[in-house]
Image 1: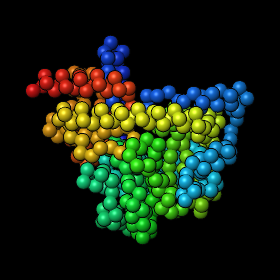
Image 2: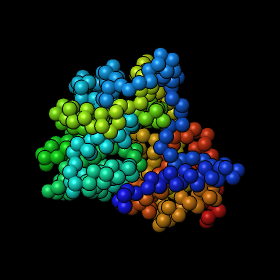
Image 3: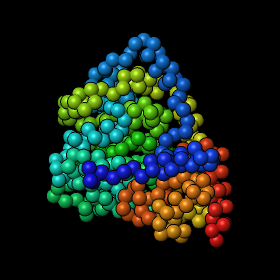
Image 4: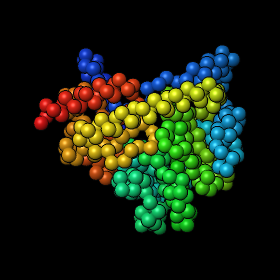
Length: 379
């Protein structure tokens, strides 16, 4: 437990909520949760499931029809057999299963720094050792084959990637993912890819890592693109050799994922739902296209245009050498809640803030205006 770090953004949220309770208006740009409600067809399917009494356990790896639907969402060239798909209580559970399968105490996992803060903690839980690879804008905040090769050691077991990534929003191009997968395979390791933001990509359509081999673990979720954060539902696609082991872990760790959430998710792939989700994706794109130039104009350095997710990772070294203090000041004095870089790793964390644009455009405009006025007072 001494190794398990807190999720610092939750501290920011708690302080922001306390200020709101005291009567202050806060612009929330800290939390990575879509502001849109769960689409109506998904909610209606859940209500129908409840009315039909669908409240008992499901098979440990999920409803067979949902596993089949998930498999069908992948293009034919990358489509897994439904038996390789396990439905679990969120993508965090999927990563826990993957690391439980792959790690013995002392085994190392390479991962990007900066990256999603809980990943290192998942590795620690199974006695593993997270090894951060310092990734800056020069590599798109993603590891390269050369970096992977340089840091691979005798105890290295796996590489974990996120694409699109949190906190940078960067996307690994298909040819780059192919090269990374080949490098990890040549080194005798396993590639684990977090694809939970795959629906939220704003340039060329993103390609699943499943295109690059059936020996890759792929994690996804109904939380971000499908707007089902509180339903706690995700999935893991594992190599076929692990099907029995995945089943045993799901049986023992979870019994099964939430039954009503699984029935609700059957509606996630219906045309009416997908039409609404595409409208929301375009709204996120419009928010990004407003926020990036607006922040750059204020002096926040955003060296690459995020290709996906709903985050901006801003270099604030022109403004401070302590992003945590800056975040605290902006919350208290400007009423804008942001996440300091300390949540995402060690590499240049004191020089960065993460902005989440999972907020209505009007609130983003208000937040930028408050930042502008705060900076003008500061000069």
